[in-house]
Image 1 (cartoon, rainbow, N blue to C red):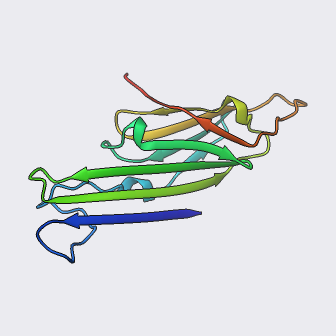
Image 2 (cartoon, rainbow, N blue to C red):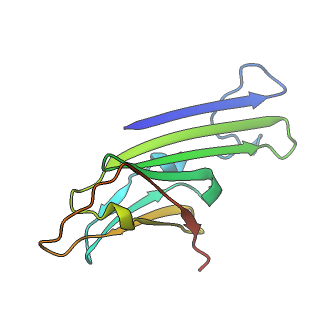
Length: 143
């Protein structure tokens, strides 16, 4: 499931577009619409979400609700001259495999703007925990 809302404000014209424009210098979240990669290798469940270099950890909210990973991104950008502004709000939901340990999910945002979500997979015979809503802090990878 995906929800996208974009609001563009331009002080010079009433019918401005929400597309990225070199003349305004506004950045859009085009990477967020790219393919989300998932993996269950090395006893870990991993999700890689390209967001873009301009996204910061404070722009992200990552939660788990009813075994769904919910990614909320809210970004506001302004043109260099201050005449235009673009506000973007995007939500994506991804069903987690039953074996994912939801209480041990970790997130890291790379300098390239790729959000990595990881959770260990249990050993055979382990039981999974059930939880309501879990909010996961997003950290910046400084490597």
